[in-house]
Length: 108
Length: 115
Image 1: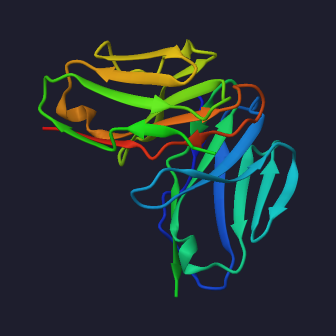
Image 2: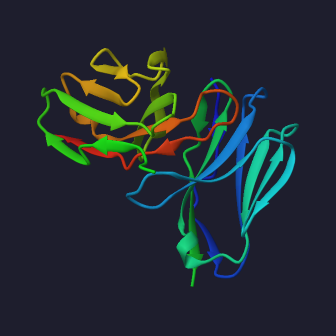
């Protein structure tokens, strides 16, 4: 059974600080990794994807992948109240598997 | 470009009734996915299609659930008969293909309540 694990939170971070979200996965053969953001009552929206080991930066967001440790993370710099949402980690090999998400709360 | 379009947005019906959820994927996307999301179980993949062909339906909970994709621009998820435990948000998503790391684009979902 392939699994994707995330801490459910809530993770509370002061505005302007760095929010760090973590995800581990069980299938060593996984090739693609995604972070989705989901606001309450809304659908998931893709914010980052990463395929190779290392870091990938896009604006305030940085995705980090370590395939040897089967670990993927998302850093959000200069956190804003609008970043408050649930963040879903997704891992894809032959099909995509989602974690249950981490609730992030940015404190004004 | 239009995104993934789902209908209805909300559905409230009594147990035992047939429920049909509809999805129009993004034009040109070859893969279509049906998910169910609940607080307890998170986002679960029910079934996915590639080029209108069902590839993996191992997530379909039981025979009461069925899904079809008669053409590249339309898919349905049917529950017959419906039960209260089917209450959830059902999302449809599409992607350019199932190969490699193609991300999925989600519709707004159908919030289903079975009384």
